[in-house]
Length: 520
Image 1 (cartoon, rainbow, N blue to C red):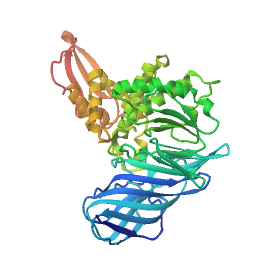
Image 2 (image 1 turned 30 degrees about the vertical axis):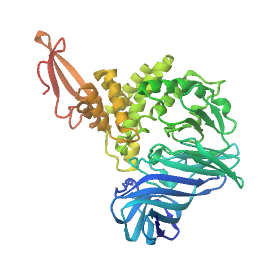
Image 3 (image 1 turned 90 degrees about the vertical axis):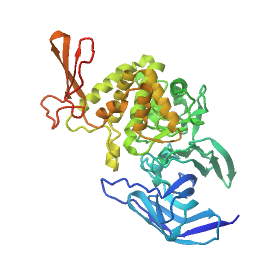
Image 4 (image 1 turned 120 degrees about the horizontal axis):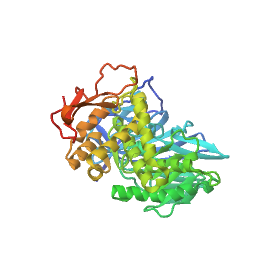
């Protein structure tokens, strides 16, 4: 067997951010797609920059002169493309920055169809804004953390940075021997040489780039006993004494979720990382969930029930994502609201079951009431909307996505029954495990399980703003007329006052609820 090497000959180029607000989120094509990726990084957060390389197995689905991938604000030092078979022949290429963090690679002749391995060496600066791969100093010690949702993985290393490109990753981290490292999976091998330690982690299950996680620094590790997979709280130096509440509360939350989903946690470990200076509250990276440290670490001398409830709710929310969002991932950011709605719905159920003293149903009702107030404004938006820019993406992760979405799912569960709802969710997870899915896939699974038109009902709540107001007009003979309109604050007038498509009133019914005629 011979190996053909295609050398992508490029000069060292600096790839920078391009675009003006509101910047569109450019989409990569499907002529060249990733199959798997290896990432090797040499990190020392005491320094302002780091080096790395990636080996991305790509599938060239049709012969092309070039393709795009994501790499933003880094120096690309060397690119090579190899594939098995045939005679060795270099292909001259030019790599240049394109829009929205993309790099365009153009060849002087066609790149043939088939599997290729794209190798890229690069140099990059650590971020300092708690985005991408960033460094920070805590009590004189330096640490590195990552935050890649939504489109920040491209700031850390070259990749295909869109949720539909869900592939296995192998991560290798080389750090000073004084530092520890954490990634999504457990270590496969560890080698020390020249004052550095190189850890090769096990290959992940298929993941989108935004769910990758890495961290390095002089961490302390606090084991969490009583879980189905190895679990730890990971803290910066000197903070181990604040991990007690997380250690105590995580096992029953995980057990409750595993019973609900009817399966063990889909990933081989569960690390909870306490991150200082973290603008996210928490992030559901599989095997390496990150929390802002003040939420995860609670002083046993001053902790109160409000602190404990917040920790329970967020922990249930993030671990629920291991199934809904991680195991099954949205194809595009249009369905980000569904990820958050489902995890919020689940956090209510798990907290109520495991910690009834927190009165989760009352909090659930209060959240629904608050978001109904928001939904009564003329300026509110539909919960489901196209995501075409970072502005629309950030807007899609608001109170509507969390609280209204959760309230709608509670409503649907009560309508079709908990057994049918659970059966539909489990079928959805089974059919799309380690792959991508859309909201319609879930609605279809719920419709099949319940033998009801779940999709038809949900679209009226998802695709238009507002909340319905139903008025009842008593009629002679024990009958009643139901009329439906959009609820608005006093004095507000909508261009379209009704709610639910073209229907402004619904069927008349007997006092016993027997339907007499169809909606009009």
